[in-house]
Image (cartoon, rainbow, N blue to C red; front, side, top):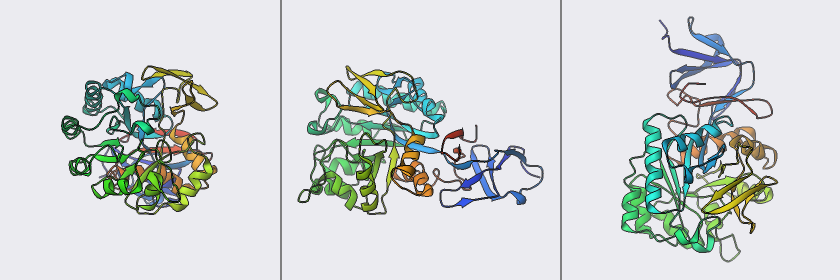
Amino acid sequence: MPRQDFLALTGARVFTGDRFLDGHAVLLDGARVADVLPAAALPSGIATEDLGGGLLAPGFVDAQVNGGGGVLFNDTTTADGAAGVAAAHRRFGTVACLPTFITDRPDRQARAVAAVRDAIAERRPGVLGIHLEGPHLAAARKGAHDPALIRPMSDADLDALLSTGLDVVLVTVAAETVTPGQVRRLSRGGVVVSIGHSDATADQVGAAVDAGARCVTHLFNAMSPLGHRAPGVVGAALDDGRLWGGLIADGVHVDAAALRVALRAKRGPGRLFLVTDAMPPAGSPGDTFTLSGRTATRRGGALSFDDGTLAGADLTMDAALRFAVRELEQPLDEALRMASLYPAEMLGQGGARGRIAAGFAADLVLLTGGLEVRRTWIAGRA
């Protein structure tokens, strides 16, 4: 007898993370995918929901999201704040995210970690872990971070990063401001180390990668550029197959031509993937917010301080997906992987997320032909 909590989703084209399937059903068993099988082969007695067309794909995974829907995680370091960021992006297809806390005081960072830990303990939908972007960055590549709060990594900082109690922790550091020994301890302790806001040489990046670093934060932005005699962080990221890299695909942070070049140049197995770097105006009518005591304003799709410095992005993952297809000339299957499978794999979650397959989380998104979001599911709940 079939279990009563099975639900079969039918009537949509299915992208499994590997291939497109027509005439198939996705069978859910509570919070997990039980199977993907021809709709004609569904056992009798299974509850069925006809989705009425569209494309059913793995839900999006955002490894860098500062805020959305009017919420800034740095200013709302509570379980409600972390869950609010996730909720704001859910209607844009993001089913798992890392609320991102940028450079601040150690006590405030500890509250942010506790907030995410509480949100996960309370099973708040969509909160996967935390991204700590700073404070161990290079002042020369500070971007929107407060230079007064940027500092070297101490033993106490290292101990705090290794004792968060979270399964998924992403930490952005500058390769030249931390030691390979610190990177090695973090990596061996389960922390995903990303290089960003860094003026490092390619050799310094290579030393960090040898020690366990596996990603670069928002490729091209706030890092030493690719020069013909000084490859910098950008050159190292593209040439070293061990590194993954996040892309803010909005046409504001990086010109589309540069992103197309990077996608063609990237050596694997590490991949380039989509992030939003979203701030409170994303998914919200508000046009201003305060970051580290400075006011940022939305103008023409860009968020910036009065001096022109970019302050995060006004971007959602569905918009990044459409940009990847239309402007970056990525095939739809590859763009979908950039939004789901690749960030999941970078975070060590590739065995549980980013695919529609038996045993994977029932985290799904239903898209229209124009790649607009119709519905999302998190842990099998629409």
